[in-house]
Image 1 (cartoon, chains in turn red, orange):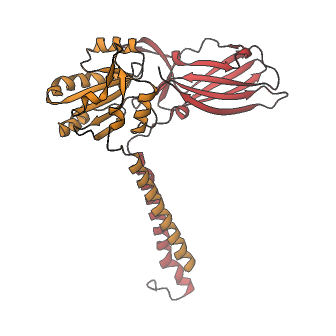
Image 2 (spheres, one colour):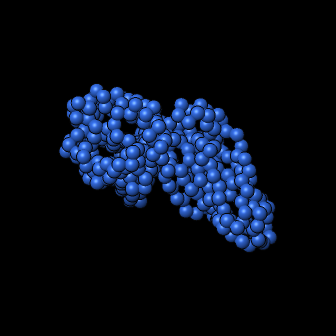
Image 3 (cartoon, chains in turn cyan, yellow):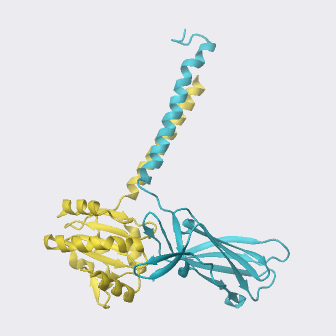
Length: 176
Length: 172
């Protein structure tokens, strides 16, 4: 009865394994296809490991935020902010304290994990005006990798009323 | 039935495409065979004198991209110093390319009693490393080259001492 399909009622049973096999093969091949290039650990690019965003809180305050991926950390003394145009008059408050670590070569260093939020003050931005917040950062991954200093830029427009734009733009790495 | 067979076929084809894409990416990700772009580099040492990497062609060459601000880089370097001492007479040559400031590199090299050249690299050097497989421009990144100038191995992240020795001993 379950040997050969002789009626529409029996057709389904022998064919189901074929369909299931198809899915299994597809999934196995997909997994293999994805696994081949992922031999070892795949570190994140710096703009994903240290994702920067910024938004206006009010006409004179920008909230700058780094979302730091699990297993990654930023060095406190390597975090810097700038605004373009400079006439917007940026004031950066002291950064929050990080986790203290004794480095054999550099001595006392502080690091951030998880995230970092800083409220930046802007002195002179008019409603509707666009500003670019540039954030430089440098950090490492626990798997034993470090990234050169990287700059991420976010373009913001101070809203006329209540609409806020927040567009991540180009990232420019540099060295030294 | 036809529809199911067709679905099966579509799945099979999709599976083959996925496999081919993965295999293709893995092959693309492999280092190129020759290290000519590295040998073409000429970089200042900590004293400011330009050094061409071409001068070390013919040796088993270990080129290590590092920086003083990279702790994992510093941690693996004492093993490089030991390997240079032990295997240098058999034709092994380490060269460090630091993405860093010369004064800091010089200070660290003195502290570590670095027994191989420490060159200072910038954009050009990092671009070469990216071309040779360091897609993230991260550190440490190490390239091992045989006596014929072919790339035997590239490695992102710290090298385990036994891993390093195993690769080198096959080439010496």
